[in-house]
Image (cartoon, rainbow, N blue to C red):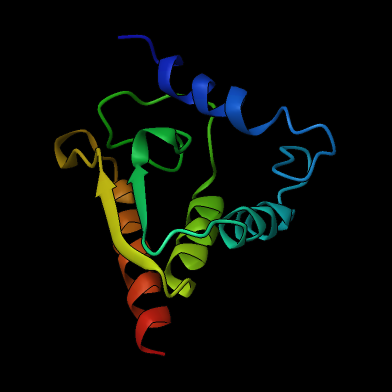
Length: 127
């Protein structure tokens, strides 16, 4: 199993933004990713949006309970920020969470992250 296969593809997609708006690994408090994601979504004329959270894209230190863990990828904070964006858009129809493998999890970190995404989505939806 190649531990970098999935996460490097995500990194290649996200980081190359010329103006550095999407994501900066150098600043853990950088919130520009969510702002940029909102601008992309707001530019869509779609009636419905599907958000899929494949937790293989989260760094293995924060989500070890996946089928293909890797050291690079999104932080749990960033995934929760994306969940907030997804839940706050009234066009969101589906929020899916995949690749949670409890038998590989350590201290239920991945399961807790999945639960956090669900709670954040429900809190935005109802509140």
